[in-house]
Amino acid sequence: CGTAGLLDATLTFTDPNPGDALLLTSTIAAALPGAQFSQTGTNPAQAHITWGAFPGAPQTTSFTITINDGACPIANINTLTITVHVNPDIGLAISPDMSICEGDAAQLSAFAFGGTGALQFAWVHGFLGGGPHPVTPVVSTTYPVHVIDGIGCPSTPDSVFILVRPLPHPMIQVDAAVHCDGDSVRFLNTTEP
Image (cartoon, rainbow, N blue to C red; front, top):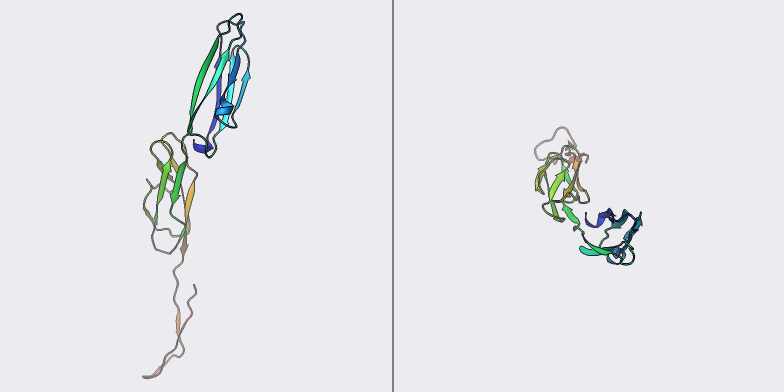
């Protein structure tokens, strides 16, 4: 899946003549930088292939495995061409972290691109699709989401954090208990945030 994908395969080759020893060679190292190719056994012979996709890796490339039975006087040589398709990474953009007052609502949205096939959003809180999704958390809450493409490859998860601030409780004190007409009144705000 994408540039985090790993190709790890074992292919088995046999010759109908049990006395023939198969020799396997490959062009994989030239086609896929960093790829590993090894052989175990001779008849049957197994080719072991490993390669980790990396950012900037080719989307589609091919390599060959050549099978030589070493028969004498005429060797039988076959070539197998293998094409590797690297699925595009899934990008995920989501709402930024935010701060709201107790009782207020917020909107969560996510947008995804890339991957292969239809994209499905997987919100931990059960929302469907990218949104917008209205939420009214009563406490500070994290909303994780990731995306899965049509062939089951996941995106890197991300999340939105909503900080819920308590409502202020205003407290106002007057400087004197009794005032007459024409007196000035001074108010003192002792509200704590």
